[in-house]
Amino acid sequence: MNCMSARKSKLKYKFGLTVEQYDKMFEQQNGLCAICGKCETRNAPSGAIKRLSIDHDHRTGYVRKLLCYQCNLTLGQCKEDINILANAIKYLSEFKET
Image (cartoon, rainbow, N blue to C red):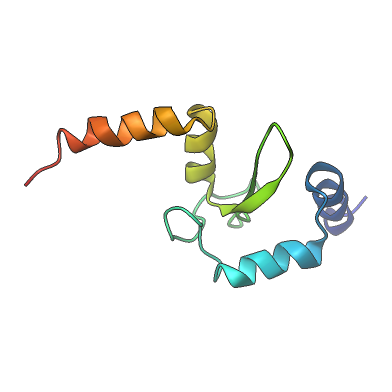
């Protein structure tokens, strides 16, 4: 299986998306992460810049948007829990320089 057909299979199997749907999402987001607004910077083993990750609800499978590796990892580490994220914001706000 070549890289393109492997990608096509993974997108369809794991997320229910076609390559064209992914590309449309990427274009709608101007190639930027939906959270931090930056381009992906993480390299694949080949040395090429990785594609943005497909963020999805792990309970329902609902595809949300595309995220950079770091933002996607952050949501995962917080278990997609809004309360944890809100508490993290509150915590960091206590130390914000004025």
